Amino acid sequence: MSHVVILRPEPGASATLARATAAGIDAVAIPLFELAPVGWVAPNAEAYDALLLTSANAVRHGGEQLAGLRALPTYCVGDATAVAARDAGFAVAGTGAGDAVALMERVPHGLRLLHLAGRDHRALAGVTAIIVYDSAVIDPPPSLDALTGGVAMVHSPRAGARLAELVEERGAIGIAAISEAAAAACGGGWREVAAIAAPGDGALLALAAALCQKRCHE
Image (cartoon, rainbow, N blue to C red; front, side):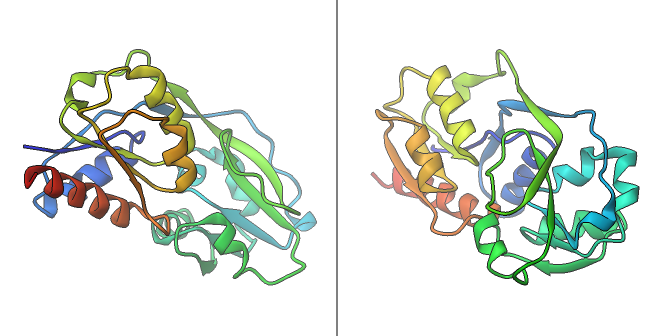
């Protein structure tokens, strides 16, 4: 029977696994990366009008330096990031639907924005980014054999590229990607590759489950 393989780092991997379990989806987590904080210095909050968060990991790994920025209204890429921001004491001014570019369309024009980001992030025009966390490859990742016969959830282009480095025999593995860019990064030779139209962990899991069902009925 086909199953879902979750590749995102913790704690996201466990969150997705819990979502899958609650939905009755057979899934296993094999993180390809491990997140860790990096040393950084918070700028003067008065130099900015608002904060931009495109991942809850920025809050989880930002450390004590976050305290000096809590007065800034905060725009979050999605609901999970908004929850993490509120729990950390930030005032959420707006929430997007999971995509950083789409979020920018909801932010008032002309604001001086500070983006707290991971090292592997998408640069946004006119936005100052500061790196507050990094993701290191887990080498080797455990249990790669679990990929065979399953559908891998690819949450980023970097994850797709790493998966392509690790796996040579691809014909028995399906790919559910969070974007067309993430799908392209996986390369060719997979059983099938599909991407969701708008980023979101729930939508990605639904796509992976649908590909599993399709496989079971072939």
